[in-house]
Amino acid sequence: MFFSFMRISLRLLTFAALLFAGARQAVAAPPTDIHGKAIILVDVPSGRVLFHKNSREPRAVASTQKLLTALIVAESGDLDKLVTIQPEDAAVAPTKLYLKPGQKYSRRDLLRVLLVKSANDVACALARDNAGSVEAFADKMNAKARAMGATASHFINPNGLPVEGQYSTARDMAIIARNAYANSILREFMAIKSFEFHYADGRVREIVNTNRVLRTAPFCNGMKTGYTDAAGHCLVSSGHTEKRDVIAVILGSNKANIWKDSQKLLEWGLQL
Image 1 (spheres, rainbow, N blue to C red):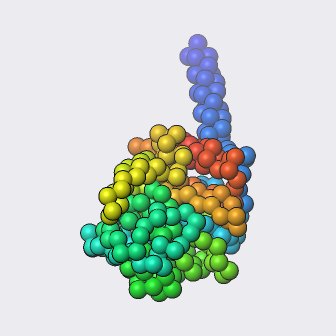
Image 2: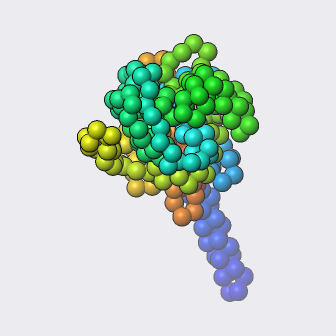
Image 3: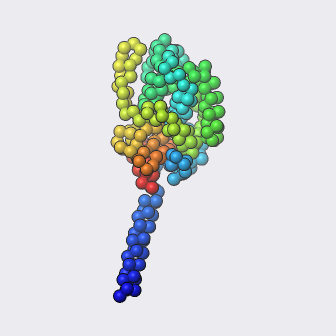
């Protein structure tokens, strides 16, 4: 009777083990229907790649490269210093905040609106203020990227507008995103769903985050959108639970799929 009981117990344990293994296998299977020319999902603390496709392929990454712009500005400090808007800042198009030459804003306020609204005039104002010119700031971007290990990129402007010779990869953008995520100021700003921006001339405008996943998925806590005709729809998104933090990069997707695919990829990664 004892041996019979042992045989039954072993069968039950084996069956439970098979069920557990099957459950693990089901969770571990990566999503196969993610649209995008280049994709990567990484574990934030370790940097371990959880999923990727064409992650080393050089591509235009549009405004997602503003993560690097923001990181350089944030790490430079003195965020309460005022920035005076210049005519060359205000002339940048198409997505802009319509700042006027001569107006003054703190670096902190401009950094916040850069990450929430993705305004190109703001990116240029911050870059010029930081390095003296957009060209000098691009040199800083490339040096910072190389120092972080993002060595397959070349940046020419701070906003991601199309220009020949500017490119990055999904892998490099994940490296940049991990470093931005580690900055508490940037992490706070990237998680803002909306806020009121006060112009120097007294106008007040509600700024809504361009990242739709932030507004639809409770586990999403920010990062950066991007779109140009050359880059397609791009999104660097981050997800958080008590047990895990992950970052997903999708480049070269389309309007119909970018939001749901990013959410799906984050959700899968957080369940591993």
